[in-house]
Image 1 (cartoon, rainbow, N blue to C red):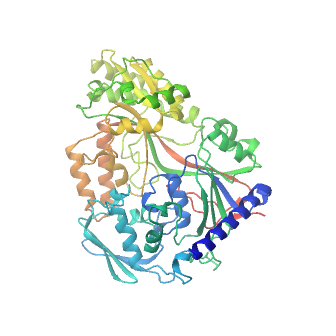
Image 2 (image 1 turned 30 degrees about the horizontal axis):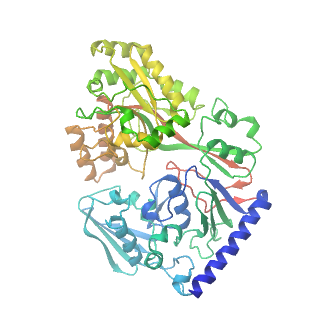
Length: 565
């Protein structure tokens, strides 16, 4: 109790010091300041299911492996590794100089990472009692008793079948390494008392308000000339859910980083060509590159999907929320219909009716790439519109297909969320122009995802961000044996399923790429989705900060940034 009291006192003092510094001398702070647009629910990597948690946990922990900015697998806690000839056994050789963050639970001793910590951390992911949302990364792939400690510095993973994406998966936040003592000491409270090996160390977290981290003085990585990382003294994370408020704080110099663009401010910070607006040139720099994210419209292809009035799916509290937000809901006649979109010609007509170039130009300030290929985005090897033939804007072709389908003005409803309402309205007008009886439903994001998972919307806006740098992350969305998520469309195709199984066991990368392209073409030929655009990572950075980079997974690497004082 005495140790715990002293530690709590130290933390409280440090919080007062940092908050005072940030409040009274914000422009000269040595802390990097960024915002997350939703409340942080945990700092336990086993529950790192969204971008905000991933950004924060990546500062506090390390995994066996890591990605560079080109998405190449690099050593981390594992200095090297071997794969057996049958691709079923992965052996990792660990560094012996990596320390967990200094903490009272270690009784003043230095606590080095061993293979036992790796086994403990990965076992937690598949432990049903832990109930990690990341269990899917190993389920069905790893063998029974998959994780084995050979000795303190050698660790093995055994698979049921060859699964080439495994190395990429091991770079995910779910796979970060923690000490067993932390769980033994904190239990469920570990979520707000993280202990890792990362470049920054936890200081304090006041939920919904601020998270503070300081530089880890024992961090093991160095730059190319031998300087210890990270360079900066700490991080300050805020949790404003309002994009407008976040933009205002960035404009006033109170935040160092702004991620992506939002319709509420895009014309203030970007010109029509996607370059930084003249009024911001002296305040911020723009960093832009490929993003492994595909925006699309999906079709519910399960002909047995239930017919449910949208309003009946909502509880009273949700209906009051929608009314308060001014979100449009059509009248009680809005039912989930499914027969119409079972017709492939109608789905193809919708694909030809949508002007992707105009969406990028007018609603995205030319940020992104019109999706004239398949589901696989630019940035992955299988992306190539010379091989994957998608859809271009062709209203005459759309009208022809609509006539051939014998469409009889049955209503078609597109479900989207408020952030994409402008694009949704534009798409509805394009569909009406060629003869569709189309309407729009705008729903809260969480409720829309629930409807998609429950097969309760037949035409919906979706977005898929790769969890790891492999085309399999996208093709898994269409494998018939996968539930929802990721298979929101309930796509089922025998040839596709055979190719999916085949590609998992293929050793040759060139053959794997060819198989992925063939699979992607099947999705497009069947018009299971409407690919809209492949997004860009876009970051605005305060000019006092240098060294901030990007990568196609939009990970946040703050080890090498510097701040002008």
